[in-house]
Length: 142
Figure 1: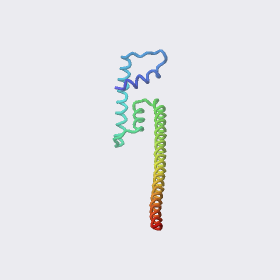
Figure 2 (figure 1 turned 180 degrees about the horizontal axis):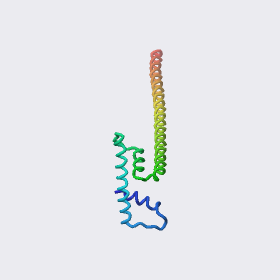
Figure 3 (figure 1 turned 180 degrees about the vertical axis):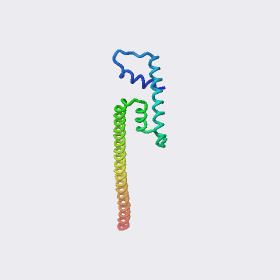
Figure 4 (figure 1 turned 45 degrees about the horizontal axis):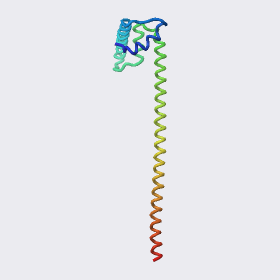
């Protein structure tokens, strides 16, 4: 059965103002939506099987909609699919950019760390040299 939450979110936007829907009507609509989705999936699966595929794709769903004589829903379905693809592409690009920024940041931090390590090492070597020089000075004084 179609999720009650999804149905309760969609119904108010699809009905004229002032129209109320009883619990029994909501249940009937929910059951009808579930049957429709299962039927559309079954029809789409037939197209995938004919193409010797196990995975349904958008083309299979579009073909199923035509077979079920719901052609008038194809234009909004195509628009929704295109909007979904654009959204996914945008998410992918944003994710790639975050990954690149993170790599850049990590690379910069690693460079900073290696610079710090080099500076520490140089200071340590200078300290050792200073210690050796002080020892030589003591020998000279004695």
